[in-house]
Length: 230
Image (cartoon, rainbow, N blue to C red):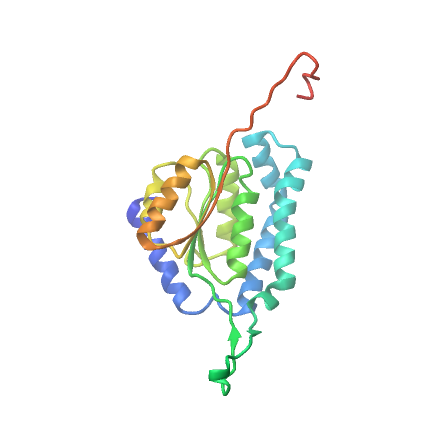
């Protein structure tokens, strides 16, 4: 995607969000059910892609990727009505004629950038929560898991109009273009170097950010190890 195409995509999503179409709980649950159905019908293709990208078995793919996403969707379907509802709070004495309550509101247009090591789960689990909260989303999976990214793009295009949820594929060239745009919330999981860039660009627009930054875990294998198991 070019910089202008990304800019146009974010603009369309913002306009769509401003129509209020994502706010009703019925719209949120409908989106989650479409996503659940698409994952279930494409499960074989998802597991094949994870095998090609990372060598994961079907069992591991379900336990650590698709199964966790389906569980997250099921959880949100059960609780989104309560999460989105009003909560009565105490009214100050000076406003005794009034009624006080808290009403959760979505942020708007959300950017989700995910890593290669759990490319399916760490892409769609944040998306599930963003949709349950009533946002639109731009999703950027890792270029280092190309087969899974291709399947993700297929699933998203099956479920959603791009003005609601859109996938952006490609490599590092697309990342700066995305980060230049003004999102209302950015979620990034990956390394510290890119995480710093996400934070730096978010500061320009006072964008809310959630970062999951990993690192390298040391591992020593000596003569007592079962080499095959290790």
